Image 1 (cartoon, rainbow, N blue to C red):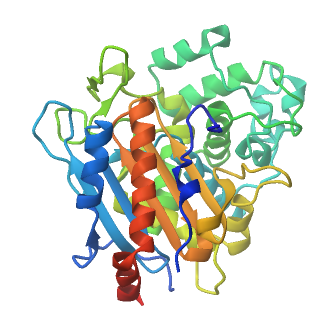
Image 2 (spheres, rainbow, N blue to C red):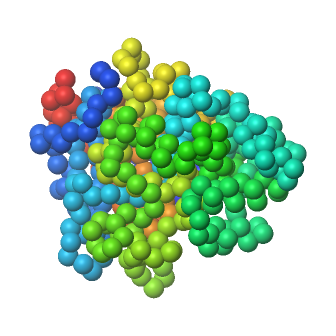
Length: 396
């Protein structure tokens, strides 16, 4: 059975694969000696009939291989490029949690900061059960915040909102926090975009700086994890990949300039980041390095990274990461995937193997899920084979 953590299946193709026999944060570089995965990815793309597919395989030392195949828009000739931008969906959640960890390290936030403390102006309207909810609970999806924001017409109001994203998140918080929590805070897991959106709003409220600026300036730029942006990439023509829906009538492209090309900006901290694969790899490498023994300098304290990566006992969702066991990884793996129904992205991190695989696709629904699953499995087989071993040796 395919277990689902947040409405999108995380890949299980890897279950059948058997295992085979640093310095300060690095800035983005393009190594021409990096192995190409294009020949590996193209059959996967064609088999699942997705417009484009991209993948990158990294270690704590650098990039082992990358590939990008297909077209930016179904029916159009423009091919995707190595520097194109890809929508990461809920993989954004890991970034939001990491941003908050960075701000905790800087003593600007606390994991035990409560909503009552963060939003004193909402105290009169906030349901009493929310006042003691902490950032830690929001980031672990244990706050009692619901998955569905349809109540009181909130979801439609967020789409219709004409103000700044920060103001939209204030609307989300001011409305949702009047509701009684779905479960007693701290007692149950429920995957919630709203919980992460409110966590991002806590950060921007306390620091009086929009979440988007905090993410870029406090986290992504210091990691070299740019270029990056928010919402669907490339409005104004086929200048970047377009997302594609999966419907009974077909797989139509979605113009990024249209309103329905992404979720509303209010939930950006939960799932609206786009970036290049190289930029994403620089972010993921922080967590790969933080999960491995070492004394090298990291952007976050090692104990903070390990807190972000560690679920509570008998659970598997940490803070923006799912922690699982896989035989091929020789121990625990970290993973997350994401989709706004028009894109699909997934990353797997295997610290004991010094390996991370990142895959993205500009097709949503079942085809995007299956294509990224199959591409992940193919990348793992490549890494286990002679070409992978040669790439590892090149970085030593």
